[in-house]
Amino acid sequence: MRTDYSEKQKELYQNTLAFAQSELQNPSAQFNRERWQRCADFGVLGWFIPEQYGGTGLSITSTIYALEALGYGCNDNGLTLGLNGQMWSVQEPILQFGSEQQKQLYLPKLCSGEIIATHAMTEKESGSDSFKLKTTAEKVSDGYRLNGEKTYLGLAPVADLALVFANSNPQAGQWGISAFLVETNAAGVEVSQPMEKMGLASNPLGAIKFQDCFVEASQRLGPEGIGVSLFTQSMDWERGFVFASHIGSMARQLDQCIEYSRNRKQFEQTISKFQSISNRIVEMKTRLEISRLLINKIAALKDNSEPAMLEAAMTKLYVSEAFVANSMDAIRIHGALGYLTEHEVERDLRDATAGVIYSGTSDIQRKIIANLLGL
Ligand SMILES: Cc1cc2nc3c(=O)[nH]c(=O)nc-3n(C[C@H](O)[C@H](O)[C@H](O)COP(=O)(O)OP(=O)(O)OC[C@H]3O[C@@H](n4cnc5c(N)ncnc54)[C@H](O)[C@@H]3O)c2cc1C
Image (cartoon, rainbow, N blue to C red; front, side):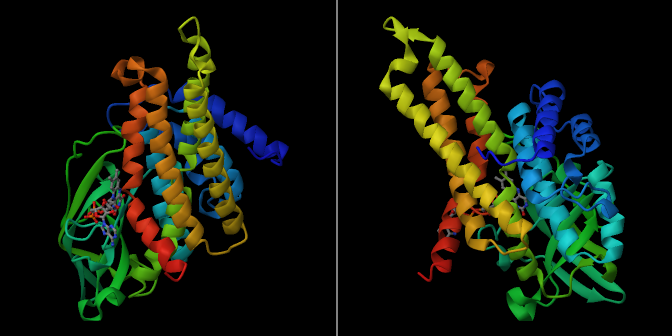
């Protein structure tokens, strides 16, 4: 844990922790709009957004620290992932690439909880190979006509806005991809029901279909044809920070394991005295600290407006795998109790598993890292 946080940062951490522990307990079995609103009212969604767009303009380092407190205090990983997903994969690209009008129109509403947004890249036939997308944005008078279907989108079933990647010049291949801000109540947009899945119950996953959906030219995010660059740059943020609150989840999980192992007795001694158990806890602690350091490193880079593509891929790879490994260790430490749904230890493993898939699988992060190392 860093020791150089300012009094103001520590105060925000403590206030966020107290808020999460008192108002965000017991994960919902489905998306809970009231809880989302409580988080928005507390200011979470606007922490790193400048004041003129409805936020509080905190540094990324402060935001990451507060998001950790949120994850420690709130055991609803689906909710914290949803908040982080919207912040890093939609709000940040709007902030970075949006026109003044787009920023004024959408950022204050996203920060206040008035609207919710999803990031729509994946399609059935293009997951890891995302730039092979088939959704088209045919140019028409004053705008574009979107056709295609996006799927496996976090928050899609409850989203009012989607950041959609579509090809406006298929002859140019991936260099024809552009990004659009599409309101989900527009004509020609159909949003699916939530898909059944193994974890993250409160973060609904869904598909969005576009059938001759007209979008005005002013809804394009950034210049035409910059979709690949926009997506790649926004992935620095998403991969770097989407686990910010899961660091808090891992810290909470570790404390629970330490507590349990100090109290559970077998063979007339607490199980913490068995080296098999203490080694497991040591590994959990080490993975947690490395995860925290990686995220903090990217936060420092971003506070200095520096790129972090390599760091973001390493962070995504390491932290997602660390959360799965720690969740499995937590179950082993708790024995049968860890396997019981009622005891809630197993839920972290179900939630963590998705992390090695979304925002690019672990295999894809390894591919990116290898490419950047010139391999
Ligand atoms: C909970 C959750 C939330 C999500 N949220 C969103 C969202 O908000 N927006 C969005 O657009 N998408 C979202 N996704 C989709 C996610 O980004 C994709 O599922 C992911 O990119 C993988 O694509 P795929 O599922 O088609 O798997 P595939 O690409 O078909 O991969 C299948 C397997 O092949 C491996 N593989 C593929 N290519 C390579 C390669 N070149 N080298 C090595 N191995 C390879 C993969 O690692 C994987 O093991 C979400 C997914 C989940 C599970």
